[in-house]
Amino acid sequence: MTHRFGKRKWMFIPIIIAAIFLFGAIVMGLWNAILPAVLGVKTITLWQALGILILSKILFGGFRGGGFGGHHKKQRWMEMQQKLAQMTPEEREQFKKEWRNRCGEWKWGSKPGDRPAAE
Image 1 (cartoon, rainbow, N blue to C red):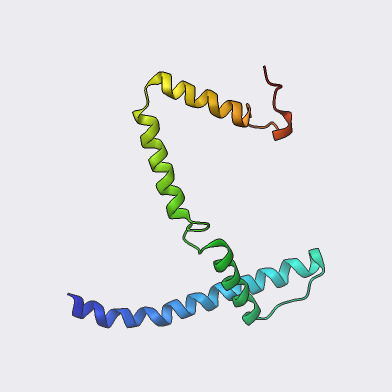
Image 2: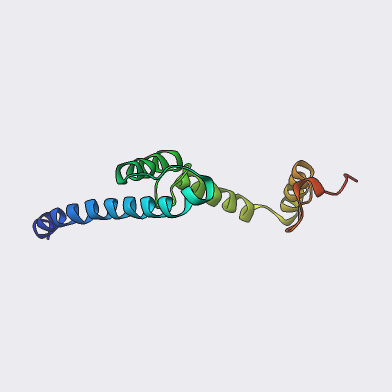
């Protein structure tokens, strides 16, 4: 089975290269169609668009949702969920109260500055 897959993996290299150039062409097309008219910037070439893609990968961590340590965030989130599940209702209420004191009440649709005054 590994021998058959070994031959197939070479077929993916041209597909990956084509996908990279396709994404670059999409970035270039969108940039050149929108930004010069809106912001007055210069148009870019395909190579510059590929550079922007590489820069975005470096800054944001990739195209699979792994930006800014995505796996580690998920792992920390799972650990927090386990800790909350193991708390008694009294401990959970104390935890929530402590976080409300730290962060204040914040409702959807309100601005962070619109927090109610401390009681």
